[in-house]
Image (cartoon, rainbow, N blue to C red; front, side, top):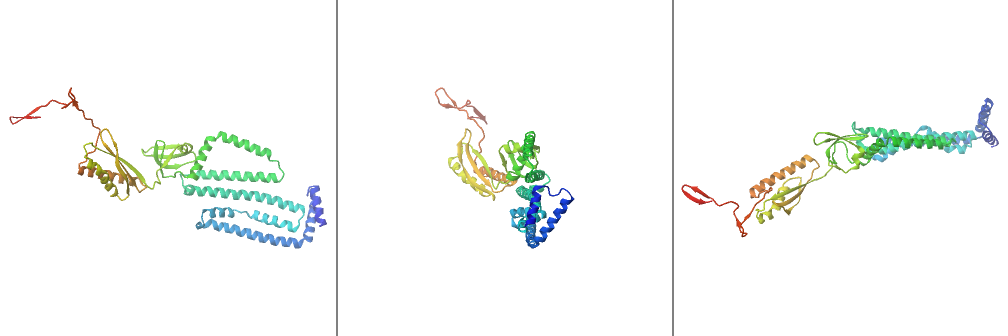
Length: 393
């Protein structure tokens, strides 16, 4: 124990190695420590080897978890992080755990502590990086692999996450070795603020693309309606999203503006609702008007994918008796919806024609009155001559 104490005093009072004599002294002290604690060192080495084997086995288990998709996405994400465990970290962790049992000289203990700090900081950065990137890629789903989707955004996210993690790890290492990092942290903060102010528009669109990754309001190929524009999403980039409008034009919208207004995604509509207004003439008899909802209901229910909701008279318009027809089409395909609505409209025309029901259109009737208020014909009475006979017109 006295020799170990002498080593500690030598390390605390002066640098460990100043000359060749100091190196020889250190070697002698190390040999004295090994000769006096060989049993403890052997036991510590055995325990350390066991710890290394267990941790390496856990790393192999993480590698297998990455390949088994049936375990779920969280298991794959955690398994990928475990698989990135560095062998140097495993060795230094085992050395740190057993170093106290072997009672090494202070110079050896300090060296193990310093290397363990470096290995832990780097390993923590690797774990955080893999977890964050794994979560982002899971949320992005199949969009990551698309050539015209958010693959570029994922690449930038990887770069940013990697840079942040290793910058923090470097600062932690410098702080643990006694370097004053206050000025460095302040400089990084000021530089970050300056860059953020200079490129706030770019970062706004970048974060908007991240919102698209996580929230998934739409994907490539979806039909959306935004403001006065309706079209199909062709590509989603870092700054802009490109739509192919119904008129054939390509519409380019920045991601920030796209998410700042109400956006309707028509691609995943399980049912589409149609509203039709039917106007018949006022000369339609009341009993026929009463039967119109039943006629229309029979027409709608005859379609396989149509669900009748209601049909009723809703208004006495200036030129028509107005009925409102409401029905759903149980298909998200817009072409199927248009086809079903078309067939229903044609069937209504055919049924009304058979029943003698006339559709109304804007008309105006003029009535003429005599000075005493009695109604008179708006034109003078005339006579028609046929075969020598006079007939009142």
